[in-house]
Amino acid sequence: MIGFAGYGISGALELTVVFRRMAGVIMMKSSNMTCIEGVNDLERTVIDVGEVRLNKFSAYWKGDQPVLKDLTLNIKAGECVAIVGRVGSGKSSLLNCILREIPKYKGGFTFKGRLAYVEQEPYIFSSTVRDNIIFGKKFKESFYNKVV
Ligand SMILES: Nc1ncnc2c1ncn2[C@@H]1O[C@H](COP(=O)(O)OP(=O)(O)OP(=O)(O)O)[C@@H](O)[C@H]1O
Ligand SMILES: [Mg+2]
Image (cartoon, rainbow, N blue to C red; front, side):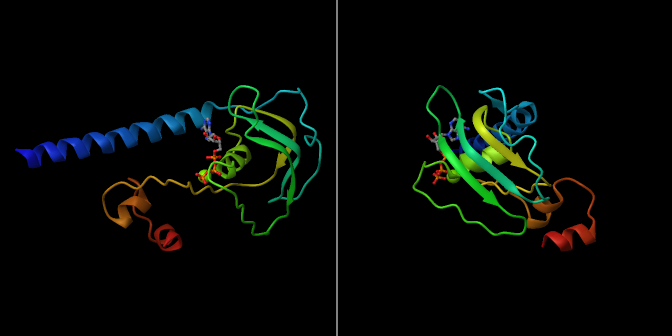
């Protein structure tokens, strides 16, 4: 009996993770990063594919306390960059900005190209590695081998 209760609890926890992830994806699509000064300083700047530029960039999750303040950086195409900082210093928030997931910002922000984002807390469901890779879609050997 206690064993069944355990299954129930772990099933409920897994469902919570699934719903939270789904809500995140839904919110992600409807999110729209707004420039609080009305103008993105770098909007008209021409950059190469794969480049990321921030100019005196500040970002806000809520209220008027920025999570990132006056950040200027230029990441060139093909560069490998590591962002280091204390817990809660805003590393993930910076990546959220590049994904345009932060609600408000000021300063300049521009990015050109395609994005692949691997989250700090990835969602993996309990099944095989193969099931996690094909994620309910039809098995395609070339895609599967590429991922592996
Ligand atoms: N989705 C969010 N909504 C509101 N506030 C957030 C959100 N994500 C992060 N924050 C806040 O932004 C601040 C920076 O958090 P962030 O996760 O960016 O730090 P981090 O450097 O990635 O930390 P860690 O080393 O733990 O990964 C924290 O105060 C956090 O509470
Ligand atoms: Mg983080």
